[in-house]
Image (tube, rainbow, N blue to C red; front, side, top):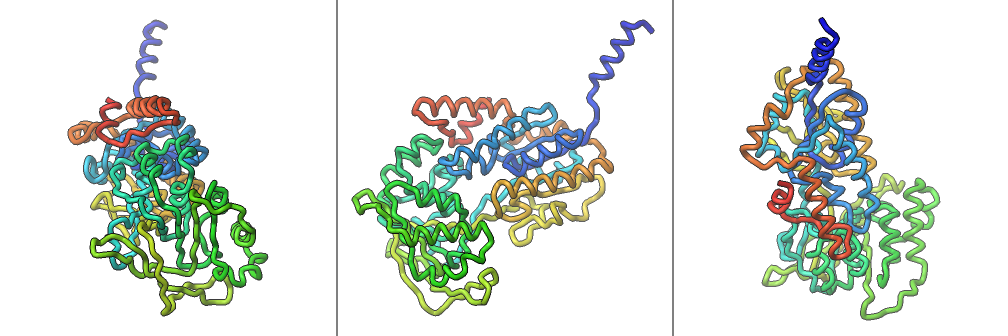
Length: 467
């Protein structure tokens, strides 16, 4: 055989695609991208990331507050992952509607679910359906451009609002409500939210928590930002901090620093002068909502709160117990910020306590051996806990398990090619190039009004741009 013929044969052989394990990740948020990052770094495989929305990045895009652009820098890392030749992004595909979990498990070697927690928990109390009782999750989606929340009906014409919950999301809501409009204009907050906030009449904001200062869930960074807001006065209730001075020295360092900041704010004389523009941020502890108070038109007018107390010797083991005492506060707007929960996207999934039943990310079931093993990472498997760093650690650990399982034997199926035509008959698939078109469009629109971007809030418009 001549050298020329041999070279042609070798080139033909080398151009034949090598069969490698096919992994499908459902959900293009932090957990999905971190898992893809670990998989592609530690084994030879093909990774397809499917997402319900036409755009990637999940909570990074739609959950991070617009005045925290530094948190969104992780998008640069995720983009590098997506641009790898063995990684594909397929947006505008809904699990349980456009493709079934059984289908994915038939045609992939491993399926990892990372679609997060997209519904909010409810209180289950009287008049919770009253006008202007808003889920914090929907408010965050509204100002961040989530298509499903763009038409949120919210009335900001009242003087006093209340936030039920004391986590980081609750402080995000508080900060966005009270941040001067000129500062918000420099962010990627949606234009419809910016206009509504510019006309807001809310001057007083109650941050209500059922436990005490030592049990707050927000972090020191969020509190520090809140305390530094212009034209905003923080008003603590001294009684809530009874005996805290005697405990603070024995607290673990992060909790100690946070508590010291609260005490410092409580004890210092704020020099903010009372004025027409001044706003008041009022944290309240040891209170649980008992019912929403409404008028004849089912309009919110206030809250009946149950007064609580902590019982137990050591602060870390104390339990919150309701007393017979109650207290009424009056407000025309209330945000429920008590946590998120996941939805059962496909009927084949087994849920318990709002999570996919799993053992360290492995979904244990009795499926036939020809079906791909099923895994779960992020909030869908752990619950809505921790910050992005926590999600990264969990995603890496689950991806490590997937690598070990695939290295011990994979069938190397055909992946997306086997289901592409069927999915295309139900929806318009948006690939990474389609996202790049949307991204460019948003940035260009933002430049026109001096913002980093102006998000497209309509799925139909996104698809139009991408195609």
